[in-house]
Image 1: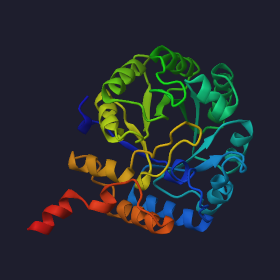
Image 2 (image 1 turned 120 degrees about the horizontal axis):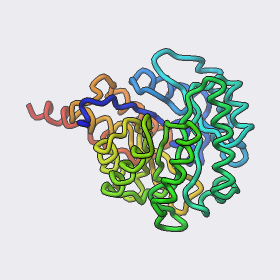
Image 3 (image 1 turned 30 degrees about the vertical axis):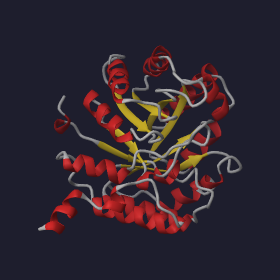
Image 4 (image 1 turned 135 degrees about the horizontal axis):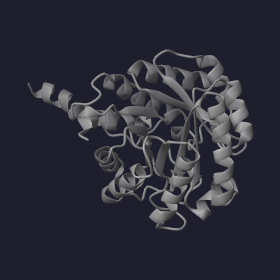
Length: 307
């Protein structure tokens, strides 16, 4: 299906996946300001944080407070990551709009991230997901390390698809593939998503690419060609998984939106606001961040400057 005929959903994960790698803890009030600016920019879903043990990820210790402060803003869904039953209970108490949870396709990464085998983690996540569905919540399940593992290298496609089929058979059809180690290449992306869509009718596919080796935007484009409609990205390109060997930033939101808009898609999103947020983050952390467009400006601005 041509990209222009599909609705592209922008899932901003910067407040969670973007910030979890930062050593400098961001005050709750600053996080809330950035999230409100992201809402004003017109992204569709924002991952506010994760309900994890604060000792493991101190940056996420204020997730409950953030949800209380933000309330239920119109025109956007606020999501959160959960890893276990306790996290789900906290999320339900905060009236989270969408729960994200996943299982790694790498045994080593699974044990590093959760302390469980793939089989143990899968059974647990499916059970938690069913509880969230019973509570009338949106649920997205993911396969992490779907394109390769920082510890193990190549991950067999059959292992990824086995997890996809287990999710689908459990009635969980909103499925994301996460390139946790940043190993994906476009041909692999297209091939794997074609197999995901063949799992059965009604699959709603999402993607989460890391830019560890500079291929995040190329992989997003390949995913879109394959039929993916949900794209997870982080403003300024911040982030990465702390439980992989080499952590790389996420797909950069403003760079991806710039690509979309140059292709005639998602003209409703305020790219100027996204660029402003990235610039503000750069000043806050006192360094240049991985994103590109917030530093170069847009092509439209460059053309206008020459006229």
